[in-house]
Amino acid sequence: DALRRIAQIIKLDIGLQVATVDFGGWDTHDSQDRVFPARVEELSRSLNAFYDDLAAHHGRLTVVVMSEFGRRLKENRNGGTDHGHGGLLMVLGGNVQGGRMHGTWPGLANEQLDRGVDLTVATDFRTVLSEIAIRRMATPYLSEIFPGFNNYQPLEVVTGTDLPIE
Image (cartoon, rainbow, N blue to C red):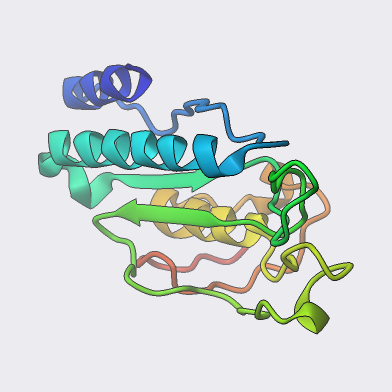
């Protein structure tokens, strides 16, 4: 429903630049094998419907899907993978260089995991969001958006022009 409302606002062409949607239910402390597939299915269907509904706006649409916490690779005793370190960030839109992974892939071998159980954080999410702010929104003011973040190097996730960072 939230994505439907955002699509309606985008179609009104009143200048919406950023919108957020909370899609909870991912904190799987247990029974992930039953909970997680249904959440992924609902997210996939919702994103597909949203993107299809906004076909005329793909050129100016950039969608970011991210979580506020990472995943463990190895299940806990209750069959959950909650509260790990590394995670996933997905980007879709008309100017996204999709179909591949951007950044560094550390691997899944035990010695490549953080503490032997968690996915390793290989890319700071602020790098991806900074690239979107600069290239898609012509906003070079990264120090105001992400105070203290000064490691921006584009990953070529989206097309656009790089601006001098202020």
